[in-house]
Each structure stands twice: as C-alpha cells, then as structure tokens.
Image (cartoon, rainbow, N blue to C red; front, side, top):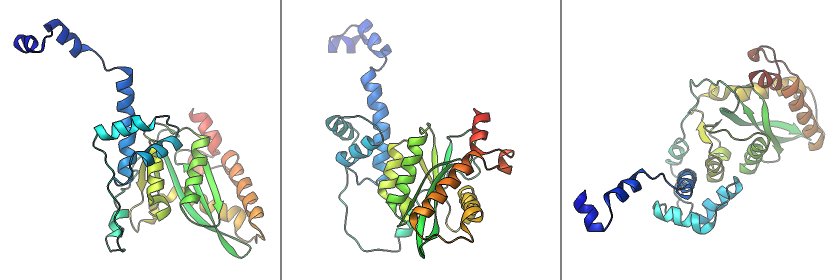
Length: 269
C-alpha cells in the first residue's frame, strides 16, 4: 500500500480517509434515480430511450433534467434497442406470461401493500360500457375507478392514476391484475415502474387469482345493476359513483369483521 500511495502521490492517511468517506448526497440521489430508471427501462423491454424514460418519470412526479438522465443511462449502458416490425407469432402469448403472480399465498398486514385491478362490463342504452377498478386488497377499499366506452389502456391507466391521487404509493407496493393487454401494454408497465410499483398478474386459466376485485364486481352488480335498465351513460356513472361511496363508507364486510373499508382502515391505523 505504501508503494501504491507513493506512485500516485497520495499519503496513506489521505487514502484511508477517502475510503472512509461516505458517498455524497448527489451520488446517493443518482443511485436512487438509477434504480427507478432501470425499472422503467426493463418494463419497456429495453425499447425506451432517455426521452421516453424521462417522460415516464416526469409523469410519476420525478423532477430530473434530460441531460442528467441521459448521463445516468449512458454510464449504466442502458441503450434502447430499435423496434423491429414483425408479424404476430405464437410466441406472443409467452411475452405476456413473463410477469408472474407475485401475490400468490401472500398475506397483507396493512393497507398499501397490494392493490388489485380489473375491468368488467356494464350495459348502458343497449351498449356495453367498461368499468376499471383499483382497490386495496387489505381493506377492500376502492381507490380509483373509471367508466368508459372502450376497454383499453386509457381506461385502466385513468383508474390507476385516480388511485395514486387518492393514496400515495408505499414502498414495496404490488399491483395485481389479470393478463389483459390493457395491463400488459408497455405504457402501463412503465407507468407502474416509474411509480415504484411492482407488477403482478394472475396465472393463465386461474380465475380465482383475482378474487378480491371479482367479489367487488359481484356486489356492485347484485346491489345496484341487475334488474335495472340505464338509458344513458351519465345515469350509469352516477349509480356507480354513489355505490362506490356507500361501499367504501357504509357497506359491511364479513371478511373485515363486519366493518366498512374506511372504518376498517381507521381501526388498523
């Protein structure tokens, strides 16, 4: 060590002082940011360059300059690959199977650990409408929902965004859903990654893997949908809105000790 210090013109005391020095605030910020950048990059299957990663992080509330982000991605060798135009092949199903069921056998101990989402069909003016819902698996509380004309990425993304506006995403949060393309799309996956949320999906052909949100849909339809006719979307939307308010604040759940989701969360706090 003495020889090396002499060669590079530093003292032994200076070398050991450098070894004991903690990383600067800027370095620690870069490490934290790079972790989130990697998550977004991986969620895009390596197709997002720094502009798209920047947009994803910005929408999730991160304030970072484009040049800083590009520097971090360059230093970590995160380079977007060019997308190839190809025809649909049997391997497409394997692509959607890359996200495992991460909540299988996992028990929650508090709200904010697992969110579940799904989409169901409701009829208005003789046409199908689509309801996307996000609820907390621990308390069964509906955190975000959106009623729309199409079952697509916009619908599920808005339900997720409403949930995020209502409740801050806790570290380690898992979002669980079925394997529909509206949840498997790059934009949805990268949105979750930018928010620091781990994605989970039900196993193929296992309908019971998302039972919590399915139970909500059953209650909704049994309580206020079945046996009624809705002449327009506004009426249907108002009915869903009132039901969600009652479901969260007043409807008693046997699995929650005959408490409402809001009351259950209040006692769990």
